[in-house]
Length: 193
Image (cartoon, rainbow, N blue to C red; front, side):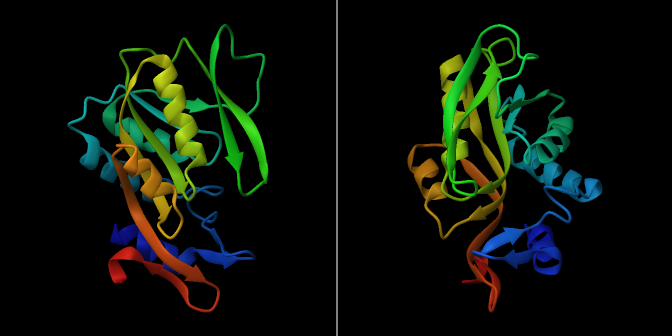
C-alpha cells in the first residue's frame, strides 16, 4: 500500500538495533484518519470472508484492529498480556516470546468472547519473527474457531515470520513489506526490489 510506504518514509525513524519507530502515527500516537485508511484496505482484502470478529494483541494492535472492525461491523477482541481480575471465567492461553523485551509471556482471551463459530481476522501492527501471530492463531484454534487470515500493517519481510505463517497455510496480507532497512540506507520495500 503506497500510502503506508510513503508515511513510513516520511515519519518513520530507524532507531538503535534497526528498530523501525512508527510511533508518531501508528502505535503510540495514532493518526486516526490514516488508520481508517488502513482499516478500509483490510476490509477490501477480506470483505468476502464472513468475518465475525477481529482479534489482536495488546497494546499496539488495538487501534488498527478497532478501526478495521468498524468496516466489518464486528467486535474487536484483544489478547491481554497480563492476567487481570476483569477476565472472568475460563480463558484460552498461549505463550509469546517477545524479541523486543527478550522474554516469554502468556496472553489470555476469555472463552466467553472467542467462540467455535467465529471466523476471525487477526490484525496487528508488525510481523517480524511471527511469535505473536502464532500465539493468536493458537488461541483461535483452541476455541474451535476458524481463521480467515491476518492483516498486518508492516511486515519485516527479511525476517522469517511471514514465510513461516504462510507456509502454515494462513493467508497474510501485509500493507507494507520491508525488504531491508538501516540508518544509512533507510527503508527499502519488497516491491522496489
